[in-house]
Length: 637
Image 1 (cartoon, rainbow, N blue to C red):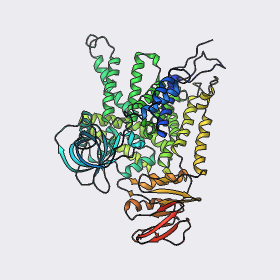
Image 2: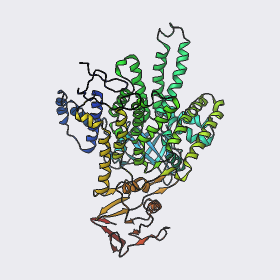
Image 3: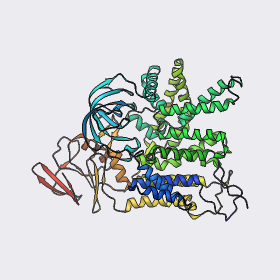
Image 4: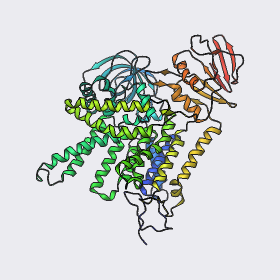
């Protein structure tokens, strides 16, 4: 009988597998699944230290090897090297920091930025600790600025978002003294690139070019973000494999021509393409660090590194193995990236490209592009719907046109930074790109917001349906065939599209028909459920210039996931942080009554103060300072 082997490029069983022969999950696939499962386990429950020797013992046996890997991944996630412990308590102190990212506008005034501790002073910090900083004065800040300041430290919430960014807490900055010291090299060079962009290009294009070249989105206002969302092109301003591939391609061509001009003795007998490939790898790493080293660009660089290794050792495999190794490396470097939406979108898009190769490999280039973009749009649609609450109906057409146009925009812009006389041509290309983007986002029907919004878990399962269907493609030509090789039932279940579709449907139906738990947003808003009634407490903050809308970000997704309409909205405060997003809720649910536990005479909406009767089942009780409201077991001040 032929030997059992799996092809490196296609991921298909070799001709040696015959019908009825069992094919186990590949070790790399099983390891990746075990690591992801261990990270999810660490999110749900703490593990005692004695789990480590147990995992090492289980690692020795073949049957328990992958559960042991999952246990080790969970322990690694919760270890001091990966878990960023929040600050123990609030404290006032002084220390020296540098600003590690571009500052953004704060609310109502001031700036927000990421601080990295350089000298601890009298603060309970360690050098290198990261904080979410804010200054509510009008003092300007800049990337890479080193400052000595009095700060008010507050503990972080330890959420997955904070863990992804390695944030220990929050710092309100006061009494700032700017120091004549240097930040790390990557931070200084990123700031220098931003200054170079500002010096070469027109002011109206600074925000766009900063976002496209170095990943600085601090200058993009709410209108731009809305335009990107409506056209389904938000990913174009996220530095990812598209940007890195273009940079790497330009560097590779340049290095190859330069090294080819050298005599063989001058390059040590090494082929020009080998030198160019390794030089490109180093330059691409520098670019990835300059753009902030986000998960998508690191994934692309790791894939390039694996492909470079495959150049020397072909037995390592091809594109699919490179993607899996990149995913494994990112999860080991920062396990909390498993919950990053950008990583989901990035890896899913590349997986679609690799696993759909039998569909487009034999087609003409134009048809290849059409098939690829259609499949990517279909695969990412559930995740985008879950994250943004809507579906861009022009996404396919916009990406078909704008992604190819982005390549000359980036190439010309990068060349203009080196040779400024090319700046007018690059500006014209960018203007044409932006006019096309605005045209796609302009129609009223371009963006559809259904009454239902799936959760992220159901959306990921729906995306897995598309990926599994592509992974089961066997033939390179039509009609398509699926694998006929008998496999163990866990593998068949993991790769069965109908199983993932049933799971996605089951999760969505459970969210609709099962009694939901009360929801408390990170701000002061909440959604309570009792006796078939739904109550929203405080609408949150809405600030158009900042692009912030708490109701759209927190409350509407919660209500849509459970297919609920609010029976009432109760306001317990009179500040903008409680009331300004009320317009968003009333636009979505126009007939919803609004009540308050204190007089609010100046709102442009009908608000009833402490009503005696209401249809939501609230019990209001007047007090000396206003009134209270009871909804089931919840007492509102």
